[in-house]
Length: 209
Image (cartoon, rainbow, N blue to C red):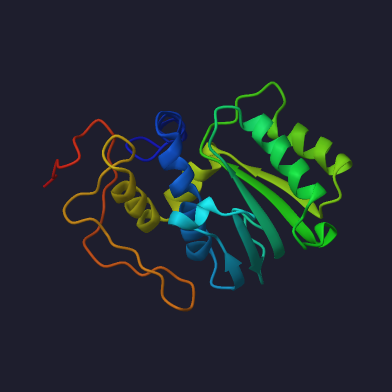
């Protein structure tokens, strides 16, 4: 993943910009979801000022299974603090005790973070332990490593992330940045030249020929 948006870059930026990460992560996830599948039946991911209010960070209903989310209903919680393990445990306990009307036996709980998972307990160990402890249909964790792979698949979303975060946070594109938009059918269309993602060391206004 040389010269592209890496897991280490995501992790470092999220640690340096926790508030901005909290604001952008739900929208980043939503954009990736809508780019990944054209068979999204319903979704609700509060963004911008919407993140201030109570409720899940995201609710998704998909008519197909993908590598990143299951078929059917899933609820999403985003973690941006340094201790991803503690945030996961706090969120799943809270949502199990008060699922806000969601039937947990028919929904998948998904925790997502921009941080690289760096705990003694691996993601798979934690998932297996949590499946025995909580009644959710399934439990998933998406960390910075998987987000980086997901972004590599969809450069239009990576370009949006670059523009949204600035030069200290994401790679830049050559020439005019792509401008993704959300058509009604849930896909992202982009206008602009082809992009090349570069390392973060370049200044924000640096242009490449």
